[in-house]
Image (cartoon, rainbow, N blue to C red; front, side, top):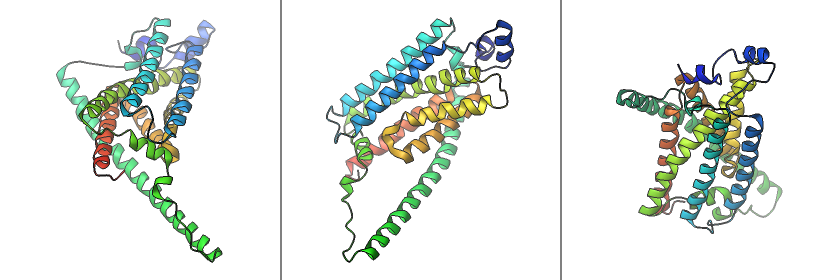
Amino acid sequence: MSAEEESGAWGEGECAKSEEAGSAPRGVAPWWHTVSLLAGLTALTLMGASHLLQPYLPVGVLGSYGVAAVGEALMLLWVLFGLRLQHLPLRAILGEFSFRPGAFFRDLGVAAVAWLCIMAILGTLNLVWMATEKIREERSATVAMQRSTQPAQKLPAGLRGPMQKAVAAMAPSNGVEMLSWLLLCVLVGITEEMVFRGYLMSQFLAWFSCWPRLRVLAAVALASILFGGAHLYQGARGIVLITLFGAMLSVLALKRRSLRVGMMVHIGQDMLAGVGMAFLKSQHLI
């Protein structure tokens, strides 16, 4: 029996069950548990964004990794507590999870192909966004010069994008920081897939089960928007791209009936991003 059949969170017929029982769809946790989780996510997001606006991360790189790890661990523990309240197994949100070598390497192959497709889409959108911003800046500078007898003064590069500058400051600079980053990526990839694509997707699918034509779209949209919003510190472009990244991971989880491929994609992407930032930092390019 699959996790969907076992919990009813990802399967059909939840609305009929709730009508017979005379109550709301069960989901994978009580409604108040989900509201508490969303409130905690909002608080962590706002505090994280405020912290990252401080230049050069006063707590230090390893300290920032530690703060992030604690936040991820608290989210994971809260989700596990929610499952326990409903007497559900972990696979109720993990989905089908085989530990056979063949199944693992098959998922790894799917993850590699999925990552290439996702990065091609997001990379194209990112380039279009950057080109649009550049054109807008040039037009604004031209208009300013035409309206003024003095040439427009450009802001120093260091004064633009404080959030992006702070994110770049988190890039690992040595072996210890790199190892810490890689371990953090594993924790983040596993936790965030369980929270956003597992727990929240399951909850939303259950809550919207009375509207079968809209429930999947609504669940994917809400979980993805929350995922993007949790990365407030990355600015508007980062939020949009991460929201789309989350939406594609949500579709992948639904198609595969498992979170493992999404975890692989998420972990791999974060690791590569850290390695890339470390290289750029070593060349004094960021």
